[in-house]
Length: 151
Image 1: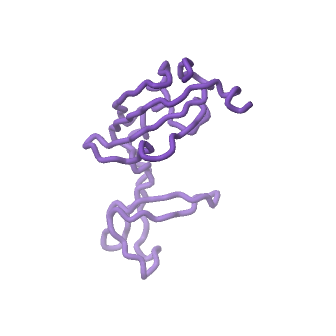
Image 2: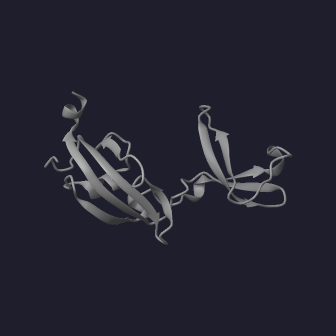
Image 3: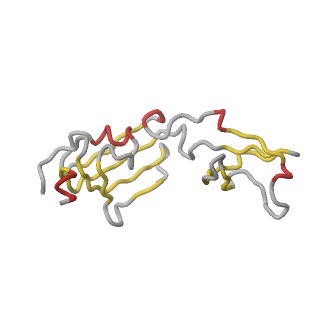
């Protein structure tokens, strides 16, 4: 087991669980293969990386992340209104339905139906976890300099 501390540029292997403030599990790899990433490579949100700094292999912890450190606050500008007839006749529109849209660059952009009114549909393009306080549980398996891991 290494004695390296987690810092920028280190390769980290860990198990994690992300839970909502009510305890509902969002994602976990405790029952599967550990995840490996390099700190600062953009694969993990900065707020999640911040709580890992200084930890070493064998460390475990549970951290509460406010929305600003997780997926941000919900932005009301990310709610868009569409005419109901812009959707297929065979589509059952109801709150919670996730729909894939294409942005200006033709990239996929998921939206969740927020409400269905008589002639319009309100779609929320915020991240589904925006505005949520999350619990981030981790068990650090290994910490190595990223260059050594690639050699």
